[in-house]
Image (cartoon, rainbow, N blue to C red; front, side, top):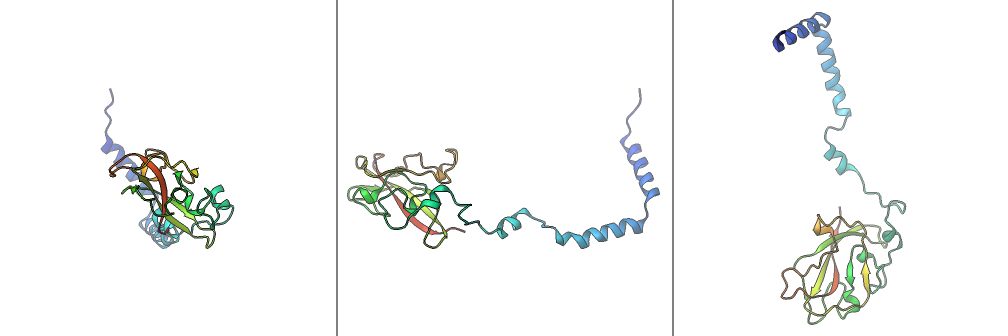
Length: 181
């Protein structure tokens, strides 16, 4: 039975390598590599930050291409790209306020919607208004850029009445948080 000797194999390989190459050759290759290195991006993070978001009509989702800015009682209003439920604007509340007798949930899901007026993306926080029977007016189920349920903060299929005095859902609001990246 033959014995496997890693040291002997390593020594043999390195002696052959040293016999076929010179110190100057190795140093010249190392120098060329160091000179060429700045030409290549070193971190994928720097490339991701340098990329500009594509806001061209072809890159927009179907919702973003058809969104409007005038009627906040319609499902195609630009802030409603990821809303699911009855619009509070049809239920006695506002785009960012609950109707009388309903309380806003302290938690929300978020979406990134493109305003057709300026072509910029904005972060929208969707809050359910709770504590009254379901409004049933202006039902919308927009799923623009919705994620799977295992990422709940970006999913609109959850009743978001956590932290309120009642888990009874009434309607949903769309609060503009600010510009998105």
